Amino acid sequence: VEFWKKIPLEWQCDRDVAMSALTTSHGEVCKHLPAVLLEDREFLLRAVHKNSRTWESLPATVQEDVEFIRKISFYTSWETVDTIFRKVPAFANERVVWMAAFDSKNFSKITVDNLLREFAPISVLSDSEIMSKACSLSRRAFKLVPEPLKQNKEFIRGVLAANALVLLEISTGTQLLFPDLVVDAVPGALRKSLKIDPNVTLHIICLAQKISTELWKTNRDIVRAWFLSGGYFLKSISSHTGMQNLKDDRELLLLLAANFPRDHDPQFFIESFQEASTTLRSDKKFMLDAIKLNPNVFALACANLRRDFDLFLAAFGGTAGDYPYKTLHKTIKVLREKEFKVVLHDSITCFMPRVEKELKKYDDFVKTISYGIMSSGSPLSLLNQGEATAFDYKRRIAEYLDVPIGLQLKMLLNVKNNCCSILVKFFCLH
Image (cartoon, rainbow, N blue to C red):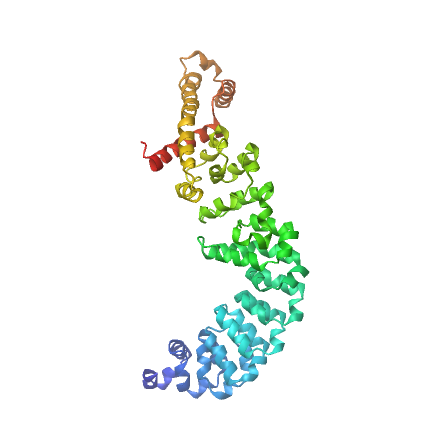
């Protein structure tokens, strides 16, 4: 400001120079602008848009001008909005001020709540568009919505679309009134809750408990939406949600296996899938379907199925990382079952010779049949009538001789690589 006072008047009257000074001084220079600029409302409006703190230094005649305040479409600072309402309380009734404030997208959740609580008249709180914008910034703003608006289905639909976590603030009565909106909101609310901290269940417990118990127990679409969106079973919410009936529900357990977030602590998956009944965990078809969706299910199969080659192949035949070492560590710890580690070792040592035998069949096929077809000095070369024909003959012969090819070969190679890594990491066997 002191430097500004010293520069020539000609420079002070230069709009570009003055605008730079206003922006960098948070509007303090405004008090020392030449009269020609102070009378230029368009220039002052541009200055406020660049740094809304400039408004605080404007002449009183400009600050109190309702037409000027209505033209401000963006605020860079929530403090300015707070100051405006304190200096000119009548402006709290101006719809455009609230719309511009919440369109600015730079207000914290606490700021939104505080501004509404302290300054918003009932006309603002009852305005569906303003409150929709407020709720998109802060779910707690929904608490300030008048009851008649809370019963407006289209308003609630729009609010939940903008911020699914508003579901945490919607009363049981409203949920029962519009159960379809709850179903639609569960995926968004759950995904946001899961992202807060992958290693903490507090947030999804809170969400589950905020959803009506009656809806949990009578509306299967909500339960399906929960598991489809990566939710899982927790004992702490079983009585509230009625999820204690999960143990024989094939569909929901398969949804759990397919959609459990891979970046979350596998302990939560293990504890969830343990709810499956012994009958289901002894059912080969069910367990095979579940393992194909999530290899971690293998750890929870009954003992005899852990020694089943088909399940073993499905669990360890994925690409590296599908059955992460972290999960094995956690599985052994959570189950507190020494038998699992023994069975794991036994399964690998039992099935690896079979895997090696299948891979040898492929190697022998490549060295004899495949090489012979492509070699000009071999009688089998007569089968080489072009690349497509040669490939077709090799495929047909491999199928006839039961030689693993394609996806089956890839799975066997993955089993070998994954199991060798497991033996090294968990059993120190090289």
